[in-house]
Amino acid sequence: MEKTKAEDAVRELTLALIYLTRFTEEKSFWDAKEFRAWKGYDFDVMNKLEDDDLICQGSRPSKTKSVYLTDAGLEKGREILEKYGIQDWQPKK
Image (cartoon, rainbow, N blue to C red):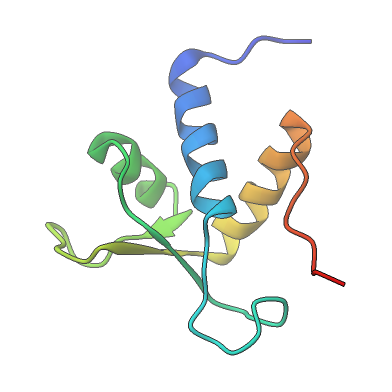
């Protein structure tokens, strides 16, 4: 298995945490199309994720407390979970 550079791992794992802690203001999480997550991560990492069009923070400098996950960010988040063998949220039965 090829090793991941520390800088890349920080970005990947930050996006994975953003993805896993996502929420929606829609009624059903499982049917939602738009997701947000709370900020709280390194500013440089967040800016890089935004530059890569994975999240949207709003205009910089932004005082909002949450970020929006783009479609690319949601897809990349799922890929990262797969890469690290992390199970995504499942609907409660």
